[in-house]
Amino acid sequence: MAGKKAVRCVGVLTGGGDCPGLNAVIRSVTKTLLYDHGATVYGIYDGYAGLVEHRYERLDGPDVSNILTRGGTILGSSNKANPFAYFPPQKIGGKHEPPHDASARAKALYRKLKLDALVCIGGDGTMAIADGLIRRCGMNVVGVPKTIDNDLPQTDYTFGFMTAVQTATEAIDRLHSTAGSHHRVMVAEVMGRYAGWLALYAGAASGADVILIPEIPYDMAVVAAYVKDRYRRGKRFSIVCVAEGAKPRGGTMTVERVVADSPDPIRLGGIGHKVAREIEDLTGLESRATVLGYVQRGGTPCAFDRTLATAYGHHATELVCGRRFGRLVVMRRGRITSVPIQSIAGRVKKVPRNYPLLRAAQAVNTCFGR
Ligand code: F6P
Picture 1 (tube, rainbow, N blue to C red):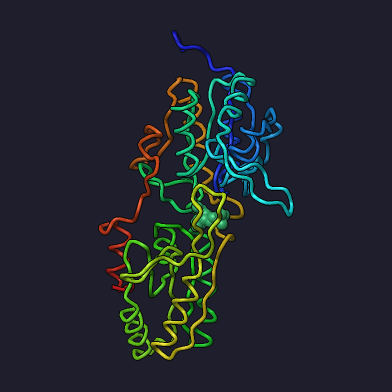
Picture 2 (tube, rainbow, N blue to C red):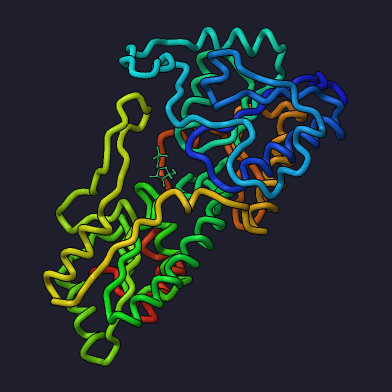
């Protein structure tokens, strides 16, 4: 790399909710830096919490061996820790202390370890903080996009998404058994936050009769009429796949809890039971809800996510070693490339109305509550 200062030392952390493929990225980044570039790698524990609290460990080959297929993250994660509004760790039974700006502590660790760059693996929250570390603390950061929600702009896919789709699909396939045996309406609530990607893909893959997503506020009368019509045609069961962020026309999303010390305090949940109750009231057909929850975030990554995570990790090291900082690795039209981290901060990628899979599902008469 003529004319460019060689990269000697790199930190890596995983932020936000965990998802399948995080370890595959850690492995790819670490092995490439160790073996291809002779660099030193430090793993920072529990996302930005470890950066502030100076909890880290040097990673060598054996540390990242045999982790490609493992779910979760060997480094731990946090979807609360924000160096710019830092809540000190809560003592058991103790009260929350108010947040303060701890970014100087984060910067001090970056300096102490003599990091040339920090690879931040995470979703929108992690990238918004990464943007702050770049602009306010002068750190060199490269981002890698993860989330089962697939809601990061500028990228076709985040890793973790396809595994979650597969897990949710298999779960909904199983709900078909009870739906058929008991002639019931079975409602599956899937995650996805404010976007309907997971519900759309898992619903389409499992042949759900009704798919409800945040991008298309639903009319329950339409859903009930559709289910009753199926019944009249001899289909005595229906499968409904509802995104946790789905909402009725003119209504609001169903909030399960508010996490006070989180940068995004809203946690969605409960829409599945609400929808099942309303369908039963309007149709007279017995209805049940199943909330798939965190099983969607766990387990071994599928082959697509393993390869995507490996390619993303490799590209991240190329950006680091080419000193192209402040960039997020993405996939655009099937090609691995990068965009400025700043260009995605605070934005959510929603399912567009003309998205091919949405149109295909509508064409096979799937009901979207409209
Ligand atoms: O972003 C991933 C995700 O699993 C969302 O689908 C869900 O809304 C949220 O995280 C749950 O967050 P928590 O782990 O804080 O309950």
